[in-house]
Every structure is written in C-alpha cells, then in structure tokens.
Length: 185
Image 1 (cartoon, one colour):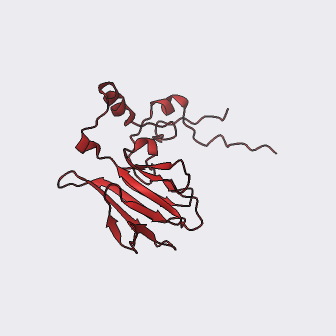
Image 2: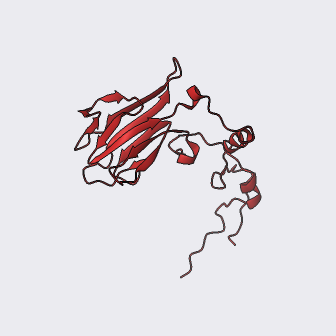
Image 3: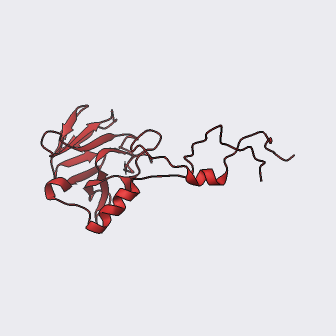
C-alpha cells in the first residue's frame, strides 16, 4: 500500500521557502551555539592521555567536561563522570578581565585543582592552574583576546559580520492567507 498525502494538506511553495529568512538567537535552546560560532578562549593540555600531548579547545561561555559524547571536552576515562565539571569563561563587566571558573557537577571522584579537591564549590582559576579529573591532569592555558588586543584581520571583519546573519532553509515562516494548496509531486 502506498502512503499518500491528502490534497488538502498545505505545503510551502519553493519560492516562499527561498525568500523566508530568520535571524538566529545565538545560544538559545532552539539554536545552541556550535563550536564554530564561539570565540576561542584557551586550552586544556594533557600529557596523561598521550605522552606526546593532547589538547582540548576552550571557548568563551560554558565548557562542559566529562565522558559523555555530548560534552565540549570529552575525556575517555572510567574515573570521569559523564557530566563531570563545567568550566565557565567570560569577561568581567567591571574591568574587562577574563574570569575563568570551574565547578564540579556532583562527580563520583571529584575535581582537583592544584592538588586540592574543590568539593562542590565553584573555584576561580588562574592561567596555568593544574586540574585533575580521574587519572588525567590538565594544564589550563587561556588567552584574553581583549587584553592582548587580538582582532580579526581587516578583510575578515566584514565576513564575520555577514556570517552572523544566519538563515536556514528549514526555518520558514508560513502565512496562512498566502500559502497555496498544492498537490504533492
């Protein structure tokens, strides 16, 4: 038996779909930020996982750390909880300095910073602090692009502004009085 769509169902004509545009609200639940949309703020570097070294990129905002694949920093270690910790990076409203803080997310084995268990508190971090989760040790390196005066090259500034005008063919508005009833093709 063939599945058919009744003729009275509304469909969007292709011209309307091309003309329809929506601006994404960055970081909203419907449109979470992808790593390519976030600003690099530093790195976690480890020699525990690989003797030649391994690193994970940290971004401004929330960086979720754990063994689960949905995290920003994925650590494959039996002693690391699925959602082990959150490392937050932002600029102070008062003086523009970079604020970096870590909080344990009720992990089974704790989060250790500079050989001290942070327990369930949130702890402000400094550059080059040593963080331990499970059998992994990480060196924290962060970069305050504002303090260093780092900016995109002149030609890239315009393309960065254009890329913030996000549109998607799947994000379509339909006005009921202008939609046509069409047969499926």
